[in-house]
Amino acid sequence: MPEYIEKFFLEAYRSFGGTITPVKDRKGVWSIGRVPPDLRKLSESLERRYGKVGTGYPLLTFDKELLIGYSDLQFVGPGHPLFEGVAERVLRDYGPSLRQGAVFFNADSSEPTVLWLLKCGIEDGRGHLIGERLFAIHKTDSNCRKSQPYALLDLKPSENAVAVPQEVRETATNEDEIIDWSLEAVTPEYFGEIEKRRHKELAIKEKYVRKSLQFLIGESINKVTKFDQQLREIRDENDPKRLNIVGNRAKEDARRNELSQRLKDRLEEMGQEQHLSEKPPEILGVAVILPVPQEVVRSVEGMETDPEIETIAVKKAMEYERQQGRKPVSVEEENCGWDVTSLQDGQVARYIEVKGRSRIGGVALTPNEWIKAQRFGKDYWLYVVVNCKANPELHLIRNPATKLTPREEISVVRYVVGLDQWKRASAMDDESSPTLAD
Image (tube, rainbow, N blue to C red):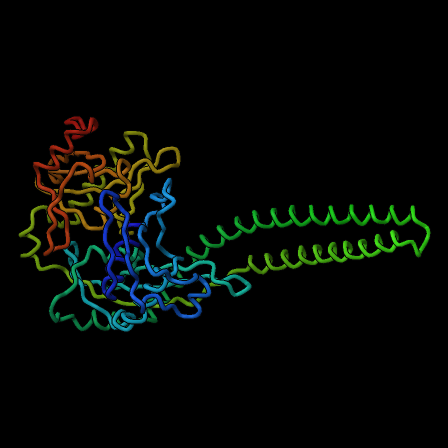
């Protein structure tokens, strides 16, 4: 998503001494007057693959949707030489620290967790990398689960030395266990996704290659046939015109053979491209995630972390979705930035973040949730369920990014929305009414 690309690039580029500024009155548009010389120097392999880095970029964006209608705007993201150069520099300068590990705090955690960053890749039979993805693996006690790497955005880095329990330290050094688990629980699903995509792409490519080359081969055959007919009409072996036709026919016959060989070669290559294999998973980094001290959590409005309350709230939200004829799917464990994906006629109708409260009060959103609220706009909904243990009441807020102005609480890395504010926002939506509590 462009928000994550933008956040990464801005922090990384500035950390290397680069200056990038927002363009006035053009949201999502940035300007680089001059790229530092050391960032313009790419490795030979990167420059050969992506091209040279420019001296400056007066107008750039990280969101492809903003390119529509603007010819002066340049997209910077994966595949762009400047972006790839910055990413390579990050791995070179900070890679060792990433492997060494770090400690974070999570306001929603009740026990220590180890998070692994794992890179998985898929190659075809020609040795070409056709898919590569970064996964986050959480391990709590003996349980592992897969999630999104941007879950790190919701964590607070430790500012001082932290005492990490010995058993957690041991878990954080057991790379083999995580790789073994990923080979069973992560890579097969990813492999299936890439395999399905590749077969679809190759089916289209084969159809195009066959159609285009067979058309050219057919044209060539017709020309050779025409030349043969002309030769039959000219009997004199020494006739200059006949000699010219013989030469043209030989050239066309060679072209036909070349096209036939090209077709054969391309079909053989596509056959090799259909054979996929998994690259060995590679661990890029590890982090220990500790619970935020309870006294800090309790001091922040809306920071109620009770699994039972959350379960009741999500159940209430999903019941409401079913009543409305939609099909809700829980994605709580995936750290997507919302809790429920609600489908209608097989299409996503709502991205729903659910907040539950035992009584009534403010709510807190994670940075990841707030980013997704801004990204999905009117398709993103905040469902607040209050009085969960007594008589759950559901309140709905559509497009919360345009209706709420949360307060950033740095101590727990959350965006806090007060009671009065979310109630006013809920009242703006027709669906929010007392009948929802029935």
